[in-house]
Every structure is written in C-alpha cells, then in structure tokens.
Image (cartoon, rainbow, N blue to C red; front, top):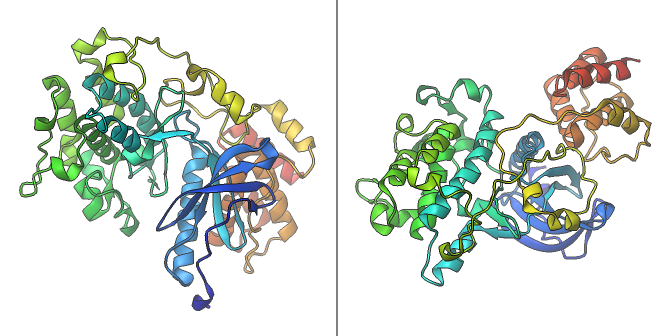
Length: 446
C-alpha cells in the first residue's frame, strides 16, 4: 500500500481544478508542494492562489504528514481575518491532491524590494524601517492573540502589494497554534511543540526554535528584528553574526540612532527572557523615539528616502468576515484607495454573522457559496448516518465557511462512536458567536 503513492506532476497551465479554478502559472514550489496562480470562474475570473500540498517523499507516511500540515494550515488561516493577511477562501481534495485557496497578493516581497535597492547601492532608511515595524507589529499582535505563532518571518514572507502602503504577512505553512498561548507568554512558560517545531529559516529563527522546538511570541519578534536589520544593512544574517561568539555585529553596517539601535538589540536578544515579550511593548518603545514623533506617517517602503512624503493616518474600515466572499471583484477592490484596503489597525474582534444573512443563507439552494468541499468524512467506525453527517457539515459551513469539512472529519476521527446529540454539540462549539451556535443546534435538532 505504501508503494502505491506517487508524487504527481506539476499541473499544466489551463487546467481546470475542482470544476472551478483555472491554473494560470506556477508561482513557486518547495519540499511540501507547489503554489499556483489561478482564476476563480465562479468569482468573475478573480485571481487567487492555489497551494497544492505534495510531499517530496513517498509512501503512506509522507502522504499522512502532508494531510496533517494541510489541516493545520487550513485551521490557522480560517481563524484569521486581518487586512494584512491574505484571506482564506477554500480547501478541498481532488484527484489525490490537497489544495488551499487564498487571496492573491499582487506585489513584491521585501527580499525583492531590497535587491532593487541594492542595484543602486541603497538600502532601507531608519525612518522607513521604523514605520515598517509599526505597520507589522499590530499584525503579529493579532495572530498572537489568536494563539498562533508564525515561525517563519523573513523578507521572503512579507509582501508589499502593488499600489498599497502597508505590508502583508504571508505563508503560514509552518505556523503553529498553541493552546492557551496567552497564558504562557512569559519567558519561563515557553511552549514546546515537538519535532515539527524544528523549522524556520536559519539566521532568522531564534536558537531555541531551531534547536529545541521552543516557541513563543518573542520568537516571531526575534525574526522580525532580524528582518529589520537585514533591510537596514542589505546583508544576510550570516554576515551580521560573529561566527565564534554568535553575537550580533550589525551596527557597523548601518548608521542609525542609538535609541532605535537599542530597540533592535532587545528584539535580537539571544535569551528569550531578555527580549520583548509582546508587540505592544515594542510599539511603546518605538513611539518613544522622540526624533520621529514629529515626522507623522511616512510613505511606503518601496520608495527612496529622498521622496518620502507626509501621509495622514488611514481611516479605519471594517473588512468582511473571512468566511464570506466580498461583493466586489478583485480588480475593483484593488482600484479602491489603500486606506480602505489596508487600514492600520490593531487586533480586532471577529465579525459576527447577522441573523438576516443566516436566514437568507438557509433559504438558498444546496449549491450555496459554501459548497461541501473535499471528501465526505464517513469513517467506517462511525455509527452516524452519512446523510446526517453531510447535513451537519452543510449547516456548519453557513457559520464558519469551508473549514467545516475539516472540523467534521477531525471530530469523527477522534470520537468515532459519538452520538448524534454529542456530534451536534461538538460542532456548535466551533461557532464563535454563542447566539449563532444556539440557532445551529435548534435547526438540526428540529
């Protein structure tokens, strides 16, 4: 059985996937799979990203590992609804392949932007990097409040969308959700998450993450600090650390104020307890840098410092919940002002579905905007009727979107002999809004 699994070839351009997505081109590939640019034919050919999970190994173990990573990233992305994180749109399995669908970010990574600067023997300025940090720290604060650690922050995983002024954090493929993270954020209570945590880019990830599998919010802050230093100096981390003492020696490659240098040094502290423990702490110290308090809001980081313009603080606008498709197409959304697309905001509560929208969703046909995707979870050991399982999954999708299929599958795997009443109760607990959970129960029990 283990010999029957064969790594599938790259999907050719023009191929239709899941009777919906048309592959345009390969965007990238790595050890865990490939990423494609595709058009969504049910969304006016809106551009999106299809992430295919395809392990480089062979056999049943490689496939199972791939499925676990697929489920983990889907669960993480499902919980996030922030304007500086690409929206999670769907997940499904087809033709023996696992896919995640995400919003397409049309822009450049900061590693690419840095190379553009270096072609002119320039790097990012102190003012630019300070503003860049102020733009990204609320994003880290947001994911940490959701008990999620990114674990792979680097210039390759931060993008600047074309025509926008705020960076976007991408690629949660090795991200990890830690239970009760908010209760264990002190240096003495770091979370050990096992062998799968021995990940992250060497030079960017802190020593405790690479060597021991320990991670905390300060791990992400460390990687963000390394990225900031790389943007300032234009040098790889391996050139900025003493190979014998393993101490940072970055200051000689850039000229910045002592106050800002102290902030970066604290971000880069080797011992976790000596680092900043939260994004809020870093933002507080950045606001105290007196020489920048009168500067106002600087412009985007892809412009030379000689053309920095004063810009006002973007107006807050509420983004739609991540499990709902926007009413506008990608082109119209991107043509709107950057103030609406990427407002500078801190952590915000999840939007709650309104009663009217839920009622109208039920009255629609079974071919709704939340189709049941992927293989139906019908374990042989389960005592539940397959039709009942499918009905529950469809109802749950109205409240939490396409992640419903994975939720149902996990519950059935963990409790195969669950009763119908318990099954509904377990599913209801996955709905963030308590009133919506009550409505979900009533609808199924009726």
